[in-house]
Length: 544
Image (tube, rainbow, N blue to C red; front, side, top):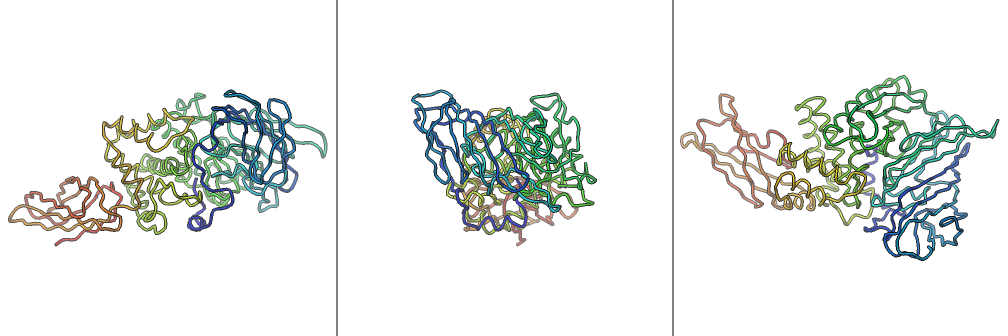
């Protein structure tokens, strides 16, 4: 996802909203939800809904009570395997006694309703039309869906949405049917969608608004799990139709690039929607939501970088999901870096290096998360505070350094193996490390601990002095004490007075002072440190 730019710095310092404290895995011991079948009745106006959710649940251990997340809404009836059950209600959970049994699957049905205050965002648009958009990240599905609301529990989902005419309903997966019920003023439209691959609850959404569809056609042919091609489309408010396809003309190339680089596209379709939520972009499985602000009249819609970022999430974050919130970089860092790799593919190395330079500057300028917290932040309890420059830009830079140090062949082979091994499941950072170690034959424990479990980055003062008579150059490297000493390879470019450049690489040890002496054949006019933009560091260079 991409937070709205005006809000990202605010979220980092706000207190955690109610219900957003970080839970420790396993979130619900002994429970595995296999499938949700959710029926939602939307009103003509306002935020009062009626819901009926059937959950297929498997017991993975002896369990006498099922606990589901559901905030505030009224629960009127619960059945377990079609038998009515008494239950205990709190303001945020439902406690359902279960019949005896060690393991096995059962079906729980929850009838509920009321005024939704979050999760499903209900608003009037600028023309006064009522709109409904799911907005569940990180654990806000519980405001409108009875669920095990944690990324570690993934399930398939079927949506059945009943609402007034004049609204287009889009949801996860494939469209099963659209049909009319009733007559006259009582007529309603029932729309059913089916997501047949398991996803986390934060990705389960509907959109119900006066949307029109622009078909992008069959894309990324031969690079999908389910059909020969990926059907892509864009849904916008009628007044936004003139800007289409705009930047979505690149949607085919984006999915094709990721499909060829990572692995086949994992879902049935990919829809891009104009929406109203709290995020600038949100990667909901098969139904990406973009902020209204991106669809300005006369514009081209969301930028290709945003489209690439949210599309990359279909692989990383959606198909392979971080099992614990502390490992959010496995979603946001991957999406950030693979969007940059698409820039390289589409525009070349110069644009890519400019993007990595921009990302590095964002990291070095940060005064909130990067200098104080590690990327894998197990202490943070405000989940919105994890939407920071550690999870996005620094996470992306960690992948960049892995690629440059391991080489393209080992890096992409390891990433593809990681994706294939955990597709439609969950993963933690050690799972990625294991695949990259296998592909490269290198022990990466020190690298992962240094860059992901420590705050900050190297701060280098590089001083050089050349002695033409002695035909040598001495380079001294001092690491500042603020974040401690790091270990890393450092590339140098030595340029002589004729403009000829010689590149050398130095393995800098994890110590405050390092010294390198190199032979030279003539005068050195300039020393460039990290000329290829491969190291996350603050670097100053001085000639002595």
